[in-house]
Length: 77
Image 1 (cartoon, rainbow, N blue to C red):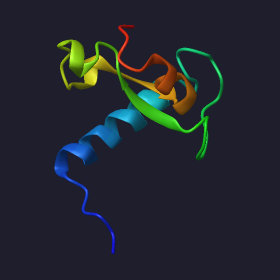
Image 2: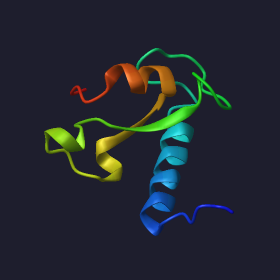
Image 3: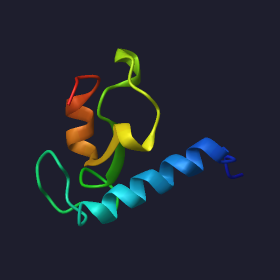
């Protein structure tokens, strides 16, 4: 059974896809071409993490590969 996707999650997926297109499919941290699943899968990153008071908005997000997003964790930048 599929897990229902909330409206906000759908919006975040659109943000990720828009950033991906604007960034020509490249991770802003390592510069590698993001693709598919695994370590180079594009993910949505909050530039100023929510845990540090960042907003959950398009302007505060960027597309990073999974490896860079996990390494960044809740750091600023």
